[in-house]
Amino acid sequence: MPHSALRFVANAHLDRSQPPGPPARDVMSLDSFRRALEEIGQWPGYVPTPLRDLPGLARRAGVGRVLYKDESRRFELESFKALGGAYAVLRLLQQDLAAAGHPGVTAAE
Image (cartoon, rainbow, N blue to C red; front, side):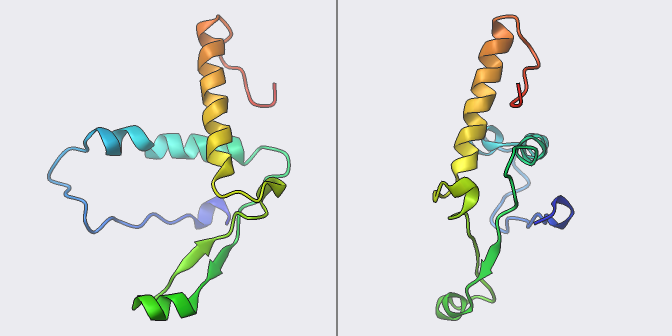
């Protein structure tokens, strides 16, 4: 999916009268999400994963539509969410390198 096609859907169960607690704050901010998308989008072999429509499941679940993000062929890893782990390791390495006096190291380096 091209970056311009990304859509954010409001969480109907979110109580916006309360500030976000640690779980919501610590997962990933919108800015962090955009940085991750920019970084991962530059990795060799990266292509957005396709969304597969599952109309039968949607009917059985009684909802309008179910989409499945098919990551089974991503980087030939056959693994769901493999990029998140790789990105997390990259960020940890970057933090350690920055603490050792080498800030700004990129994934390409």
